Length: 202
Image (cartoon, rainbow, N blue to C red; front, side, top):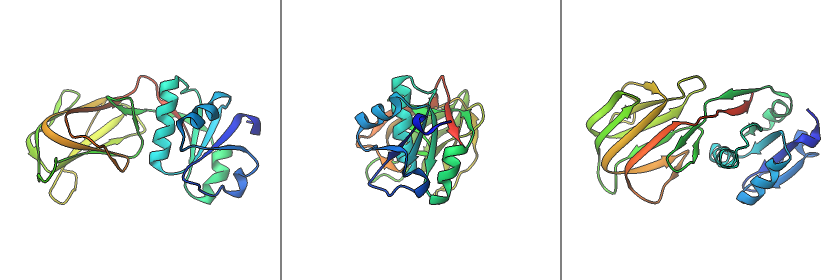
């Protein structure tokens, strides 16, 4: 792979590792810059957080450019691997708004409430029916694509269920995606495997 096919997306004004300094780079905080970066690239290197990586995957999904290989650099030592590593297609998890999730998502109680009331299912398995403290959803690198668990009062998973999709119906819940709290409470929410996975460089 030549340098002309690799573009670096830098988030939050982060310094570029020396190994990436000679490559074309753009500031990824603007979605238009992400779109421009992937237009002629076969590999994109994200210098940023997991939330920044999720933002890039969301744009690739909406642009139908999941043929682009994606690497994330969070530490300087990972820069060379981002350049030379091999890409492998893994499941891409999204929500009903078309936003990707990379690390984890949570359903939390609304307002000052201490529990979520409702029901959640993973494919055809009941995750909970009644009240729970919270729910954690994580992408996994193999099929069927995700796992979910109801959490105890100490925010520990009770049991993990794996599946293609997890859906919640509730009297009210807050949604957290990759550390970002969504502004509105929801009564329905879902996370599921996109039809096409993403090419993770590792």
